[in-house]
Length: 440
Image (cartoon, helix red, strand yellow):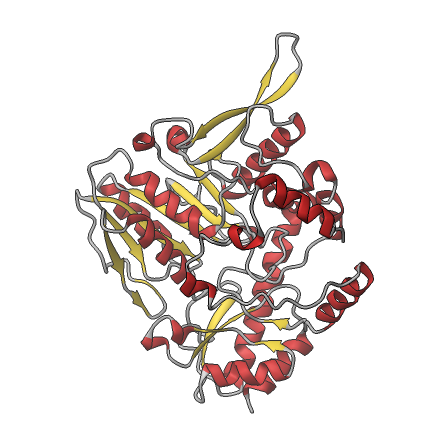
């Protein structure tokens, strides 16, 4: 912890140089706002006192046993990852979109892209976007750019936060048609693709954790020359079919589950992949591998479709910041875990989530979409709480549990529905205790 104090003499000297007093520096602030400002700051602290105060605040935090999900998950993170990313050449590197970016950073981007393509079964990947929400919104916007089609069909099973970002991207310019859910999954017969449709968007597993019939949506989209856009779960690919196997055109994801801490909501990582024919429309930046005139391997910034480099009206994206440190983190996670590790995480996540679902059903709780003989799900599922989701969450906090997500805040028909997530980190004792808490 470091800071540079300014003495009274230095402060006076600086004000003399600019020829203004303290009050003059704030004269641009309207008087009505000044009345609401308070400059009664506490007295200064020494470094030792600051450390003590920060420690006090740190100790007031409480680490909860997490059964919440909705796009951000409490997965195990190998210790080696934090050790590597904290190296100064990675941790403090400038946003790598300039031509002079180092070979090490370019290679890290290239390796990340390669691993993401292998994981998703897709042709190309960029070197990351902000998060899962902007990745999906950028995919929709990319599909629309350069076409005369004006309608996008989106499943209501898409993460509600992602849907809000998409609506912001397309506001007042394009038509959004929502496909209704039927018993927790998107109804394949609930929409019609016409010549005005640019793409069909679906999430698999969907926001409720349920597995979708992706092939039916891809087929309906392609029959009308529309694009099939999929939001996927990276960990689920350890046991589920990849986006490439479904023949989708663009596939995006939130990469937080690949080695990134929850961090109270970010920063996280937007994964963006597509078929090769879309490479010149892809947002963000792509690192490529080449050979110089002496035959040595080198890495270059191959493509960067951004408004800073081309005419603004022709840009497919305004994405400027590269989440490279987060992308490197996910690359390290994939390298450390390997294919078998990802598969093991997916298997344990599935087994444990189904164990908890069955325990809750045995305890008398209704699982609207996932009865023992019902539909399949991955990692998370919905439980109907007769006495209210909010009350269940409050009781969980008393026991040190983050019980899940109150779905009622998104839709009226989801009132008293609790979305519970289970990862490989959860133990049998924790899951049994959660059932006890809910059975109060």
